[in-house]
Image 1 (cartoon, rainbow, N blue to C red):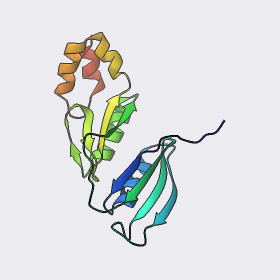
Image 2: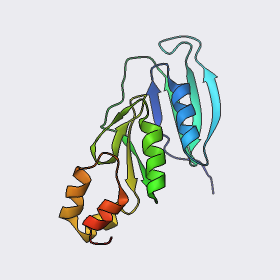
Image 3: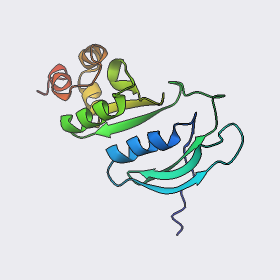
Image 4: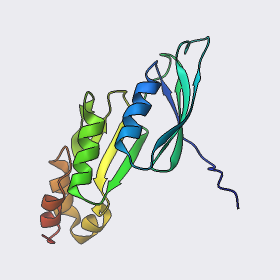
Length: 153
């Protein structure tokens, strides 16, 4: 059985791939830089192509120049078991970026993330309207108010 990963997210940066990867690898456990290849010419000249893993998931970061930018149309969801985990990822990823409602944020490099409790679906099933109302009032998600809204706290 091959351990080949069939789908690898490929992230296009404008001369910030190395800094972005350094941030991501510092925040997620079981993460590492696999390889760094310098780009000798073209729009990404002096940039890099970086293969890396975040919690065992392989990614590639590429300094391709300013032609393409990230949008919220694509985001990465970080499922967290505890409030401490939510706080870790929320503050670590949003510092120098932009916080948004309902656990969404843009990191300093423009990539969108959703930092959410792993139990969010369960809480939504327990009490959809009160949990959604509580969620819509939050930036960084707080688990206990959501549990209370679901009648579980």
